[in-house]
Image (cartoon, rainbow, N blue to C red; front, side, top):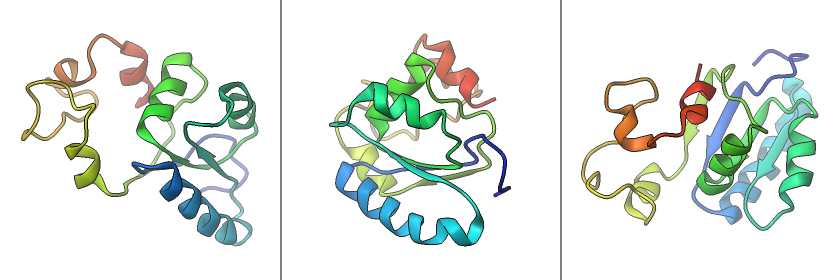
Length: 131
């Protein structure tokens, strides 16, 4: 990560707020060493307050999928500078509800791929957030 840059450079996506809190707690212990800000983004918190904090220049975001998509749709988070992505408990996230019908058993498309439209639907802002 490049300290001093205001963009989100790393994203950890985790299925539950409990895991997001736990990961954020541990990441904040390392933040002073690497010179980066850390922010947890999950449901159950005020969206406007999270949006304000997102403008504060956190370099590492720990998010749950639903709240991350919410911020992407609102345009309050931009992922075009993310160079590191961690999908914590990816197998669990792919087995829970929320996977588009017909895609169970098939890996989701990467943003920008030909199958991208099938997985992400018409929300072009999400695709654009990945650069």
